[in-house]
Length: 317
Ligand code: SF4
Image (cartoon, rainbow, N blue to C red):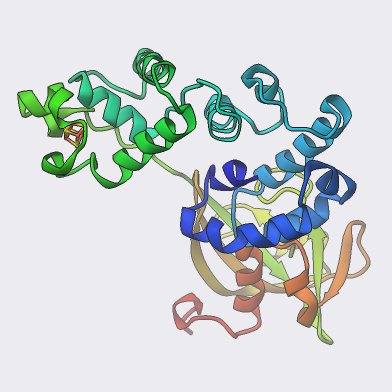
């Protein structure tokens, strides 16, 4: 559970929410008995919701294939939804004491500097080299789980990307980059990764204490509730939005704001709208939204349309 939560969320946030997860889903069987919606509800605010769906699917697979026990074999672990090489290595070594490596950005930096390897650590050859180096280290370790955690912690707190604290590093005597004085060159900087930019028009029909919501069938925030969202150019006319969404009426934009996800920069443009009966659309009480599986972005769209939004979101007259 903690490894899946930690895949894309900061440790501090996971630490806050972990007890709630363990209380509601103390073992794979408990999660498998619950609906995916209840896992999504518990996941609220942690982002990257595909992990919640994968976690639920993995719990179901553990129950049906492994009799409810998490397997300790990394190959069996990697067959679970949402479990890649890193997560399988973390579970196998930390939970079961198996001599399996873990490579994240911190470990890649540490092992690259120990060998003063100046080539990229993120291309295919670089990653293969890092996994190989980490494998050698963990296979020589008395406690593989502790060794993996120590390597990650060392990279996060001592062998940092900028200004590593070599004088306090327990590995300083065996570090080739330290001897060469090349710490700042290893590993070389990544070429800048560009986020995809997307415009989404949020159509909010809020009245009589309720708001019209639909389950997102695919793409971003799949499975979560949201006001209807229409992708399109920033200047999309209300008439075109009406046709694209099946709304009876769409107002001109009343607010806009920018929202970042892991891979996308999203510009939300918010409109008040009016929907009639429409398949997949249902009305949710506004004061019960907090108990629903809904993303932080969707909540902000609703707040923006209802005027209880930060000043920066509002369109100037
Ligand atoms: S000596 Fe410096 S560069 Fe080498 S592993 Fe330690 S902190 Fe990193």
